[in-house]
Length: 293
Image (tube, rainbow, N blue to C red):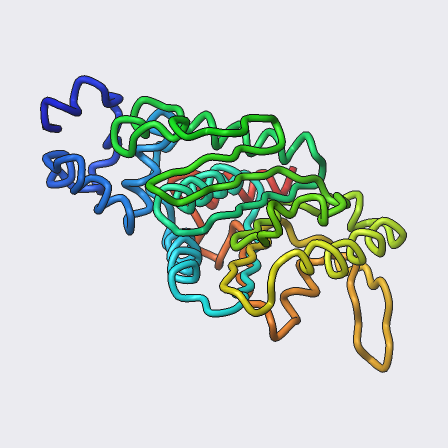
């Protein structure tokens, strides 16, 4: 059982999966925070007990670990790019990661880029909603105690003595306007920033890539610790340009996959003839049936 000081406030589904271990249930508040710091499944169960029904597959733990370690050890810019299949909790995972960055890391300026301003705002709203949940407030405290700005596009506050800025921005945003007190971001995430429509149009793809390379990536300080995460979908290989045998694709994620400056993981829902990425969520049979239909 959870200690009396916590049990009355926690959701009954705090530990929904037996695989998280009965020993975690008897931890005190500080021990819960420490256990959740490195345990993605336990942390996710605290944040979203009514949504997280299954433990994340090993790949998600790998991504979670790389981001966390990167924030703690990066001396310059660490660039990570991931392609995850649709219907595999990609957006949920991103929100969990950003909550971890806020609650555990020393990152001060966090920016979420999405394909549109409304999608980026929704991500920020979802994250604020998670931080406002009973479980999070019980374990970590009230993040709004030192909230000095609360808009759809920007949340400015202090947590555990660390100033935090969480901002939403759509693709194509004039990024210079995102600088706060001349402070450059130390955690930047591109969450489905390029749409399938954009990746299918050479004109739109060219405009997006000019913004992505010439503006968005220029927002960070190349000489300061920073983690940049690009997570999205891999689209068809439509060539945007080709010079001296070097192909530039309309799909930004394909270009990042081929870049030596980025660490990339690209994975589909079906891994082999007998194995799938997340068997508890999507069986091999259901994926094959979807493909055939």
